[in-house]
Length: 258
Ligand code: PGA
Image (cartoon, rainbow, N blue to C red):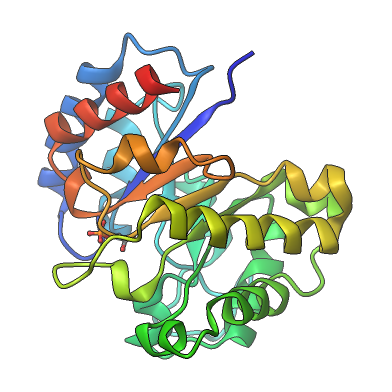
C-alpha cells in the first residue's frame, strides 16, 4: 500500500473569516474526488476563522489545526487559547514552535515543550516545527540544532504519544518572501537526522511512525522532487498554498508522482 502523503498549510496572519471560507470551499471542491486514504490534507487558519472553517469544510476532507496554543487547560493567561477551546471548535491539530513563534515572538524550547505536553494530554495531534537559522547552518550546526529542538521540545512525551505527533522541518532561512528553498538533497539529509533522533528517543516503532514534513518556500516547481526524498512524508506549504487552485495543483502532482 502506498504511504499516506501529508499536505497542509498555515495561513499565518493573513486570511480572515470570509477569505478562509472562500478558500476552504474552493479547496474542498477541487480536491473532493481525491481519496483521503492517500492524502492527509490539513489547514491551519487564524483563530478567529476556525469555527467558520469547521462549518464549511467537512472533517473527512480537511483536518483543521491551530497556529499556537497555551500550555494549560485553563487559568489566568490573558490572551492565550486553551486546548479545550480549540477542541470545542473542532480543531484536532496544533502547530507548535513555528519559526515565527520562536524567532519573532520569542518562544523558547521550554515553552514549546510545555505546550507539547499539554497538547498530548488533551489528545490533540501535535505538529512540532523545528529548523536552524542561516547562521547556525553556516556554522555547521544544523543537525545539532534539530536534535536539540526535537529532544527539548519532546521532553517527557512517552512513546505512545508519537501516535499523534508530526514533525515539520522548516529551516528558518527557507521561509517566507526572502527565503531560499532547501534543495531536496539537503532537506533529505536533515530529515534523516530527525528520523534517527526520533528512533533514538522512541525506538524503531514509535520513531518511525512520526510523519516528517518539509516546509519553507515549497512551490509547484520543487514540491514533487522534495516529496520523493525517502524521509519526507509530506509538505507544509505557506504562500504557494494560499491560492486554492495552486494548492490543488500541487496536491495532484505530488500524489501522481508518489
Ligand atoms: P512559505 O512558508 O512556504 O511561504 O515559505 C512556510 C511556512 O512558514 O511554514
